[in-house]
Length: 68
Image (cartoon, rainbow, N blue to C red):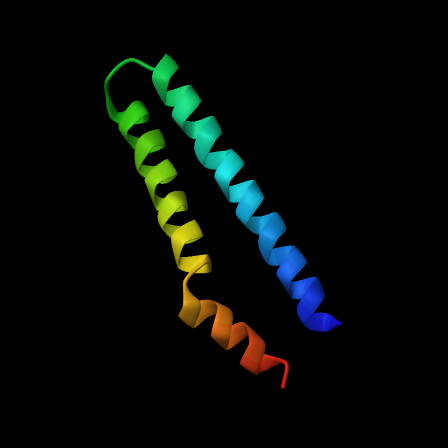
């Protein structure tokens, strides 16, 4: 039962991260070229990388081995 809850939490985290990246990209479109826009786009890219990492097989496997 605990692994099901962990999977739900991971899915919720992934959804929040994706929404945050979308929000940052939308805000960046409204900003003029410069440091603030670059920072927003950089953070969105970091979030995308985190989502990919969360979905990687090694991370999924290690989550399952913790509950054993």
